[in-house]
Image (cartoon, rainbow, N blue to C red):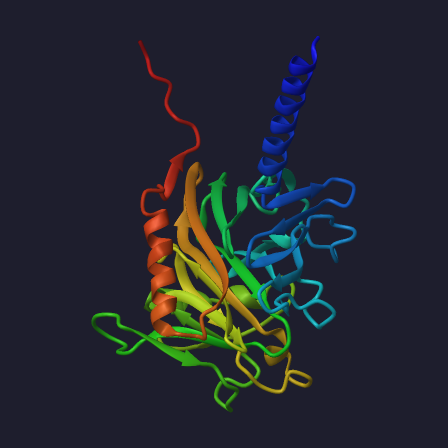
Length: 339
């Protein structure tokens, strides 16, 4: 091989290495199998999703060390009361008047990928439903969640509760309907401790049926008994916590979010509710029949938007546009076509 051919070969090899490096560097996620951790890094947020049941505070999915990179602000509740729960997880599975389990304390099958991870909880005797959640990390600051549920039994008022917990200093907000009856026009309110709701969790249902589900006794069974303060109907299925202009925003598909919850601002040292700094999406709340397959989406965005209602609405509308073509149901056992 002459000098020119050797030089050309080296240049080709260098080009392949550069392309490979750039491809790898553009992947937002790195899976660490020895730790069972997914490290993610986007242009505005970074963090770790710990999936090790032993090392992750007994949680099958546990977000920690989540940082808003432009300011270095800590978002997850590391080292605080809710450190064991992490920033974001799927919590209770409930039915009419009853409690099935907590997904976050059950072992899941893990399928990491370049842009996220899929967790699958196979059916159990106690929870006769398969639940699959795909976390996808999108530029510049988005955590998307796709959920598929396959029920193997008839479940009245079936619900899965999504929960999120924030670092100290964050204060909550939700959107309620300006008028309790008639056309819904969203109005932002901030939640502050007061005698009427002190010691109980504020939740805002989509309609009266949702309010009835919240108080049917389902939350006084299983672990962590709690009661809900039923507020006005929600204006958007969206809750947020803010600190120094940075908002952590959680939203879901309106057809599938039957209630939105968020804790109030108060004495975090002596008030368990205020100390949680948490928000919730109550999903489904419908009668599921054996053999039914459901699909829904949720999104968390962390951004410096200053709790601006118009910007929140824009982000929510963008979410709706992104999911509008996704079906809400699927066949578990499709019929075999006959020739």
